[in-house]
Image 1: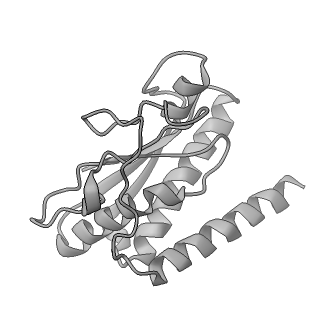
Image 2: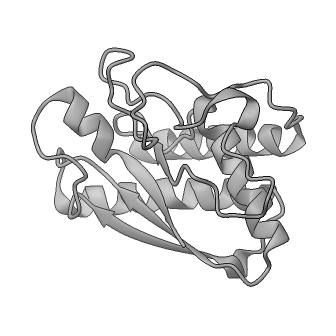
Length: 177
């Protein structure tokens, strides 16, 4: 039963990655949302238990015209999910653009979870999240040799606490260049 759930989740994630790879990147999402601090980290105040914002303003959507590493280096996930949320697709597209145009650049995709669940489960979930981002970037044309996946599970919390806001900020993948 659990295998079917994981297979269904994988099928959905791959479908989203394929659709994202075929879709226009014309910047229709501006990425600006309430609940984003000036440093680009979501504060989680935009909705019940969701980390919001991509840390970008206007139509820039995390894109760097001058070839610099995109400013937003963290994307967030829903509870117990490894599916990329639509509001972070423009961030991933910006990272893909940077990596494609800088063939010597390497990035470690660090998967994280909140502390709910067993250590083993959270290590696997963190890895699935990082691999979801890796697959998205590969569909966008990034060379697999530029990407490395590591899972920290619940070991490196961004925020301590048992509130839904704290949990939401810990469910993430960080781009470590």
